[in-house]
Image (cartoon, rainbow, N blue to C red):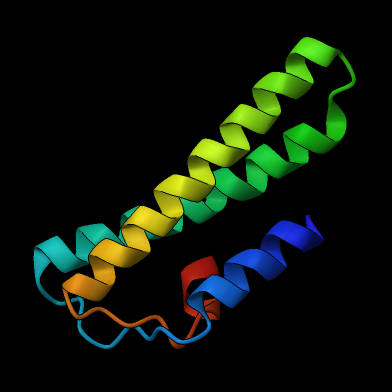
Length: 91
């Protein structure tokens, strides 16, 4: 899980959650949190499978979740949401 966590941490290193009082922003922040959890779970799954078909599925899932995460970060940036405190997303 280390590589993915490092990747996510790097992606969010310059962002900070200051203003998510508005319900749209709050929902977006929660979606980022859910996506991070899904990415962690997907990486654990990827590391545990051995069947070639399941490895392909695991890779596909990881890649799609990474793209979703990047999209959500871009959307959050457009909304003025910052994620400087990355650890707050992991709780």
